[in-house]
Length: 502
Image 1 (cartoon, one colour):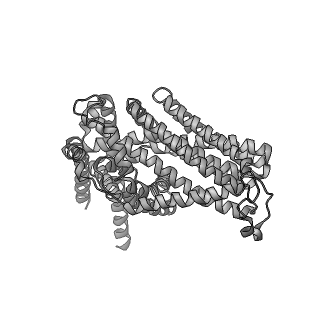
Image 2 (spheres, helix red, strand yellow):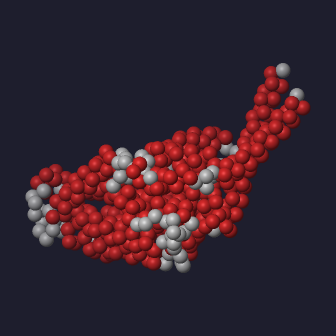
Image 3 (tube, one colour):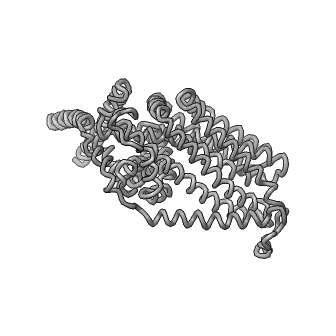
C-alpha cells in the first residue's frame, strides 16, 4: 500500500509539473492571427444586445424628465408646479428652494472634475504615487470621517464609516504581499496610456459630457432635498436616483473602457502607434463601435460587473486569511465558487473582446474567461489587485468631493449633511472613475494580449514580459502545490477511515 501511495504521489508530481509546462508553452505558443483577422474584418460587426441600449436610453430620458420637474418645482419659487399637494400626507420638512442646495453639488462636481483632470494631466509622472497614497491613506480617511460623524451626532454614518475603515484595513493586510506585483502592472499600464495622448483627450471629453449630465441630475436632487417631503420620502427618492446615476456613470466608464481597450490592443498588435500597419482613424473607429454596435453590450454588462467584482475582491481577501477554520472555510468556499461562476459571465475582460471582436457581452465574457483559464493567465489575474487599488483611488476622490460639500452643508444646514454629502460623494466617484478607467482598460488589454500571444508583450516591453512570465510560473507552481496538499490530505483521511473500520 505504501508503494502504491508513493507511486501515486510521484505520478501526481509529474503530472503537476507537466501541467505547468504545458500551460506555459500554450501561453507562449498562441498565435495572434485570429485577432488580426477580427480587427480587420469590419463587416462582421453587427448590433449586439440592442434591447439593453433601448432600456438605458429610455431610462435616461425618463429620469431626466422627472429630475427636471422636481428641480423646477422649487426653483426660485416654492411649489411652482403644485407638486406638494401630492405629498401632503408626508409633509414634515422645512421648505427650501432648489438654488439653495444646487451650489453644494456644483462644488462636488468641481472638486471631482478637478481631481479627475489632475489625474489625467499627471498621468505618467505622479500616477503611481497617487495610487500608493490612496491604498495607505484610505483607511485613515474613513476613520477620520467616522470620528467627525460621531462628533456631529450622525451615529449611523459613524458606525458605517467605522465598519468601512475596518474592512479596508483587513483587505489591505490580506493582500499586502500582492501589492508589489500589482503596482508593477499598474506602472506598465500607465506607461502604455501616457503614450496615447488621443485617448487622454477622449477621457477629457467624456468627463465634460458626464459633468453636463450631472448638472441636470444635481438640479433635480437639489429640488428633492429642498422639497416638503419628510426624510423617509426624500431618502427613497435619493436612493432611486443615485442608482440611476451609478448605472449611467458605469456605462460612461465602460464605454471609455471599450475605446481605450481597442486602442491598446491595436498598438500592441501592430507594434506601436507609429507603425505603418496601424489602421487609419483607429480611434474614430473604436469610438464609433463603442457608441453604436457595441453600446447595448456595454449597457448590459454595466448592470452587473461592478458589484460582482467588488464582492469577488472581498471574498478572495477573506479566503486567503482564514487559515484552518474548516467551518468558516466551507462557507466562504461556497460563496467563492458562486461568485466565480458569476464572474465567468460578467467580467471586465469582456470589454476587450467587445472592442476587438464586436461580440455580445455574455459571449465576450465567456470567451475572455475561457481564454485566461486555458492559458493559465487567470492565475495572474487572480493574484493581481490592480482593480481594487484603482477602486480605492476612486473612493478617495469621491470622499474628498463629498467632504467638501458636506462641510459647506454643515455650516449652512446641519440637518441636510447626510443627504448632500452622500450624493456628492457619488458624483465625485463617477467623475474620478472616468479618469481612472483609462488605466484599468490598459491593464485588462495587457492581460488579454498576453493570453492571446505573449510575443506582443515581449515586443512592447521585454523586461516586463520576463517579470510577468516569471510571476505566472510561480503562481502556477503555487496552485499545483496547493492541489498536491489537498490530494495528500484526502488520501490520508481515507486511509485513516479504512484503518478505523478495520
